[in-house]
Amino acid sequence: MDINQIAEACIQAIADKVKNLNTLNIIVAGKTGVGKSTLINSIFREQLAQTGLGKPVTDHMRKITKEGVPLAIYDTRGFELGKNAQEEVKTEILATIREGLAARDINKAIHCIWYCINTASNRIEDEEIAWLRALAKDNQDTQVPVLIVLTQSFSKKAAQDLKNRILDENLDVIQVVPVLASDFEVDEDIVIKSFGLDILINVMAEALPEELRNTLQNVQIASLESKKRQAQAAVAAATAAAFGEGFSPIPIADCAVIIPTQVAMIASITAIFGLNINKSIIMGFVSSVLGTGGTTLIGKTLAASLLKLIPGLGTVSGGVISGATAGLLTTALGEAYILLMESIYNGEINPKDINTSEGREKLRALFKSQKEKLKPPPAE
Ligand SMILES: Nc1nc2c(ncn2[C@@H]2O[C@H](COP(=O)(O)OP(=O)(O)O)[C@@H](O)[C@H]2O)c(=O)[nH]1
Ligand SMILES: [Mg+2]
Image 1: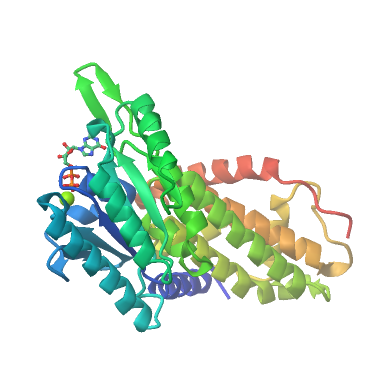
Image 2: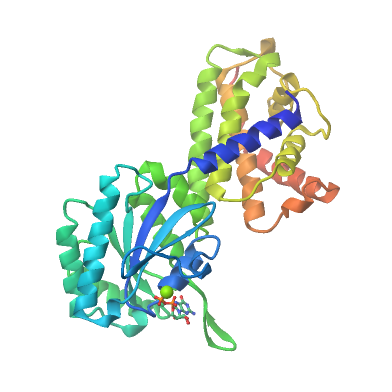
């Protein structure tokens, strides 16, 4: 295997991983103008709510999707039109939930409902409370988690007050989360910074089943920390797998046996970050890690180069690596790749520059700082 083949394997694995992400389905309800579209655009990639009107699925719901994004938002409208419309919205929501369950397909089920209330309005109306109670009653057997999002929370204090009043109602909701989805300009020189979206993501990550956690991270752009946590879980899983593969010590020349595990790990991390990663980025990454630009044969070289990532482990006794070392190599590679993803996500490294000498230099500096953080492994 050479670098080119490894990169090809990674690109293939990334494409498969992303294609196989389950679709996350969220119903967003609340009165017109409360800030549903603003929220959707701020929390998910690809400016979802601006892609047009979406596809009408019921009288009061449009389904918003975008090619390549494993997410469907059911945007409700007409809640402010009075009792009849509200009743219809509720009936349509419940019917959509039941339809999804009947399909017995995680991609079709409704996974969460966000009910949005504008904090600036400073109130939850009696009719909204009654509506939420009635919804909870009919949702008792379907158990779709309901979350109240307090939108346009320009004042954190007002949001907290409203949150307390809502909590006093003892509604059947998993959380009440105040947010300001996008910065609010009070005046030319007074801007209130957006907040709370990362908390909303954390609440979602807890509420969703395991099968949707990678999807959530893939589609959300509100919390880098949450992405990193999920990516680190992928590294831990791959590390444990590599440890097992090295259970009977691997001759150093055969280190390629752990490569599939590491390729799968790279694919998971890429899917979690939701970035467009092409072959030249992977080539840049692999060759920076290996410290060569050419088509070096992997195996001995890969292992030897990766071992250099771990301080205090210059040589390997007996020409074999143990499970502990295979695990550490995997951790080192995974952490380095997370750093790369983070730098691209933050705009610190432009993927276009990765194969320039400046880009390579940045990568090397990045991995060098990473290397210093790794502890030496236990004695072989
Ligand atoms: N600055 C700021 N304005 C907001 C925010 N949320 C809503 N708005 C304002 O409220 C208007 C209505 O929001 P929109 O998202 O269209 O509400 P929807 O009808 O529930 O989809 C927007 O045009 C914004 O001016 C926010 O988080 N920050
Ligand atoms: Mg809207």
